[in-house]
Image (cartoon, rainbow, N blue to C red; front, side, top):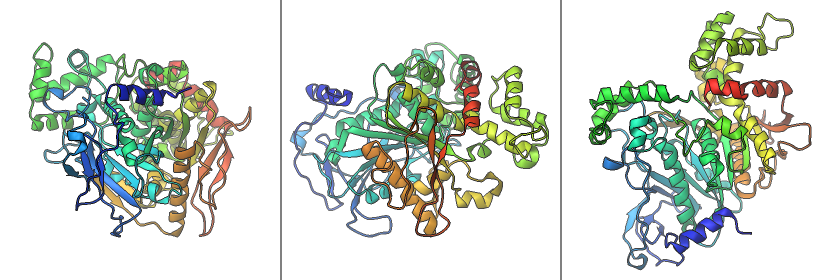
Length: 565
């Protein structure tokens, strides 16, 4: 029986979208050339350390959709014309660097661009069409209001893999350009254009990755924080009725903010029209927003509450809240790895340890993020997470109580929830993890945060620490950090290439068991830094029942309706 991806490709071939022929070999003094028939790109084969002729070639800033400007602002991405030109004898475009970042929040004119729908590809230098290598596609986080591909280089993922893999990263629209919604916009435009951008990039990969040596039937989607939430939203897209253009998924620290309901989405929309100077409703509203200057758009972004303009239930791409779709089985089954950092919640608890002294402090600071949660649910949560003064409480301080609560709501429960749902759908290759090594740069700045949010990214992406407006720094690893980095990348790329994290793991790493290795116990890998060079600090643990009990509470239908996740 043909897979859905194979059927997609056959249909595309019939429509003349996918290139069935080998195109002319083109050359350029700039670097190795990939010819897609409608366009050709020269890449960069220099390693990050400056070594020429490395085993990886990078192609950056490749458009995957038409520029979303002018009349296409606030609309779904439109496919490029990928018709073969002149038999494939096309000009070679310089693709040796990143494309422009999408406009961030906070925004500045001159930093980032509306014309940002591009992606990057890393391939083994000797890979070519027909090699059918597995593909991993990465989506950045950043709360859906900032994020760029520049902070997440994937050279090591390709360089270290023993049998060959292709890596891709994508830009997608952010803040009001990617997630503004409301009745006026949806009557003359599209909500969730940032999510639609992600889908458009994945569909471009389906049509074109074979020319780089990739296999469109072996695509893994990966993302962290808002990128992890986006992975879930892609899995639940259209309620699972249209399938997905990927086979596997990795969701790291699935990060959900408050999802605006219809009335709040309209309030946010009116705020934007007021700042820009457009009428709040009527036939001229959307044309006015589309013709607004970039300076006006930047002003509206900066006047919007940070992180509140984000994906919404739109009735089509997101027909219901993701939690509801998962509970109803209305999603596409994929092989899956999901997990979170040990102390994700400390980054988002709403204060420092000294600010949490009383029960009232916990209620006020933790639930400020969730205005829809009623008092009854708050009191149930306070009982579920007993006061440090209560006999037998697992929490030494009110801060420990608060950050654990914040972690479970925002980051700690959705991976478990989806893993259980995938088992119920009959998916075999499901794996769980807990990241237990802190980002040393962030730890030095705030020691009380421990294994804080984004710690995993530091090890997966060359010591990265990112910030809005394309800000990124990279810190060299020490010896044991380097071991964990190689171990983690090997687990991730092994899963992407075979469906198991253990197939091409590093020799010193423990085997990673399935989430459901037996009928009654759940397992997860705990990734930790070794104490000395020569081994692994990682180990397998039983998923704690107390954590599962708390997650059953948060993922219950009544509570998820209040937290809107």
